Image (cartoon, rainbow, N blue to C red):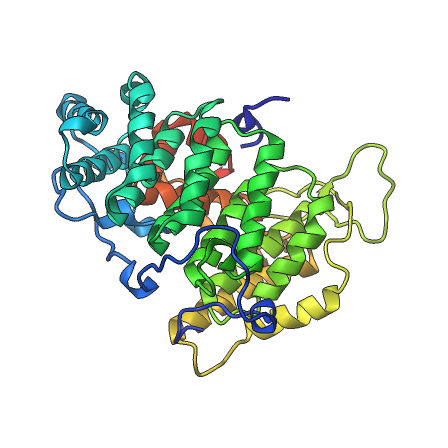
Length: 446
C-alpha cells in the first residue's frame, strides 16, 4: 500500500465543554499518566501578534494554532527581502537548533521562534532539505524533554511547519510516537493542544498509511467522546476543539467514510450540546463533511433515483449529477431540529460575536445536511441569468484572484493549512507546490 497519501487529491463562562456523556459519567478513567496537574487553561493562551524575523523576545504567532483572517496574511509581494539576507540568518538558526550541547533553554526557545518565523514567511524547502536529518532529531528532543511548556510547543509547531515545507514518506514513523506521548503525558494543556495539531500534520504530510490515518482519527474521536478525559484534560474545550478539527482535516484524505460515519456522527451530534461555541462549530463542520462525502459523482452505470441530487450551479458551471451512496445518520430529522436551533441561537449567555458565529456556521451546516451537494456559504439567490449564485465563500490570493471554497473538504483543508501557516498561508500557496496540491481549487480572476 502506498505511503504517499499526499499524492491523493490532496459555555462560554467556564470555557468548558459539557455534553451528555460528560454529564452522565462523573469523570472518565484515564489511559495515561497519573497524578500530574497542569495549570489552568486560562494561563495557557499567549496573545497573538505578528512575529518578525528579527524579533525573538516573545513567541507571538509561533505559539499559536488558529485560522487567522485572510486580512492578516502575508502576500507574496510583501516578502521582498533578498534571499541572501534571510537565508543566512535562517541557516544560523538551524545550526543553533541542531547544536543542543551548547544551548540554554532560553536560547533554544529564541532559535525556535525565529525558525518558525522564517519557515512561515518564506518557502525554504531547499534550505531545510539538506538539514532535515539533523533537524528532526533535535526538534524531537525538545518535544520529549523540553524544559519548559514553551519549548515543547515551539518544537511541535516547528515539526509541523517542517513537514508542510518538505513532506516525507517516512517521517511519520519517527515522530508519531513522541507526539502521541505528549498528547497523553504532557504536564501542560497547551503542549497537548499543540501535539494534537502536530500529529494531524505529521499524519497528513509524513507518509502515514491509510490504516495509520484511520487509527489517528479514532484517537481523536476518543478525545472528543470523553470530553478530553482520555488524555487527562476533562472538559477542556480547547483540547476537544483541536481533536475535532484535526479529525476533519484527516477525513478529507479518505474516499469512503461509510463504515466509520455512524460512530463518528454519534460523537459529533453529542458535541453539538457543548457549552463552548468552538466545539459546537467544529463538530458541526465535521457533520457537514460527512454528509458531503456520502454523495459522489454519478457513474455511467448508476440508475437515476429519487434521492439523487441534480447538478448544482456555483455561479459559473453546472455541477455533475451526484448519487447518495449511504445514510450518514438515521435520525436526520432530529439532527435537523438541533441544527435549526443552533442556527437561531439567542441565549443571553452568548456574546454577540458567538451568536453571529453560530448563526453563520449552522445555517451553512443545516443547508448541507438538507442538500449535501451544497457547500459552505451556498446562496440560493438567483443571478441575472436566473441561476443560483452557489458558493459565496471566496479567499483573496495573489494578483487579485480569489479561491472559491465551494465544498466542505476544501474548507477543512484551508483551515488545516492556516492553523499551521498562519499569516504565511498566501506565501506558501504561491510558492509551495505541496500546499497548492493540497487545495487545488477553482480560482476566480477579477
